[in-house]
Image (cartoon, rainbow, N blue to C red; front, side):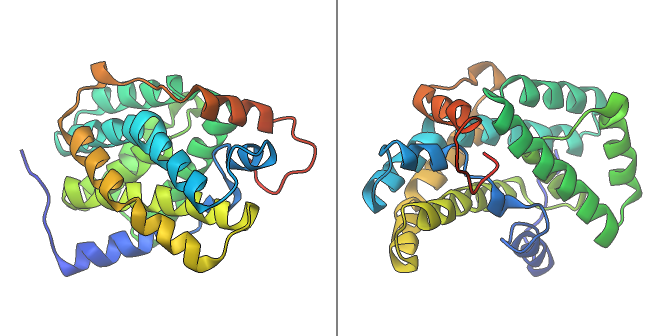
Length: 234
């Protein structure tokens, strides 16, 4: 199997695609952190880091990491049927309405931006196939698909994706608790080992092993839907 390549050009693509400035609207999603802060479940840098470690290890981090790996491999093999199965699986594993919006809104925006700035006939064809019957493309599936088509190594792409996901949650915490930028950076630095561990687990795990054990995270997401004052969409 083609495993993608490490190159300066591919590194620049990842840095651009997973930058906070890339137009997917990541900054408006907190993955339930907004309600967790409201309830006092997240109060400071320590509880923020502990919360995100749980999300990475037992929730969306590992789940999306496995889907990312499987999507990348299916795209390399040009297995469109498998890609559609993974898209449906990704949607089925979203525990709340807001988390589904968080995922597919960013995924659709990511695909649209890539098609506009890095045009590819292969991506146009596959994204049209996946979007049949008005289906949405989850964010992890979108980034994995694009990375495979552009020949970016799976490990590099997955590391970048998980780091960007974590960074966005830290950013939400910095604004909501609030804590300073320096403390936010310390939290992100403290998440590095967890990110790399989740990456390695995701690379070697089967979708049969997918699951979630973050009931409180899911609860905060569900409660956020009716939170009176909100800055974030999730």
